[in-house]
Length: 103
Ligand SMILES: [Zn+2]
Image 1 (cartoon, protein in one colour):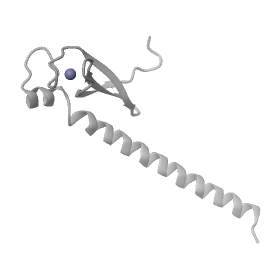
Image 2 (tube, helix red, strand yellow):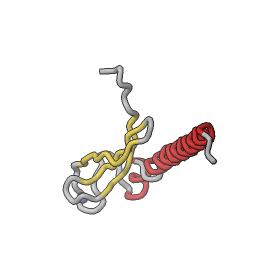
Image 3 (cartoon, helix red, strand yellow):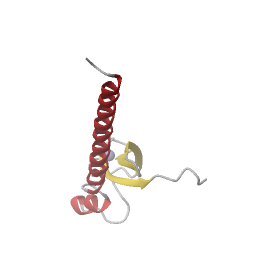
């Protein structure tokens, strides 16, 4: 019933579908990373909590901020800036990934 060519063809179709799904997933992740960081960036934090000058925690007034790497997209690293004292998330940012050739 199945010729070798038919099996090969089916394999090719499966491969194409899997690649397409991966590509779409990559685009979705990239877009989500974009909005993830921008909806709660530093400007947003300053506006929302009325912070001017040095950044302070809105919960405990702590001044030390720790940066946590939350996720990575193709081009950027997504950071969460949290209060080092109480752990509250203050704001988010993106860092461009450094090219491998550098450094
Ligand atoms: Zn705090």
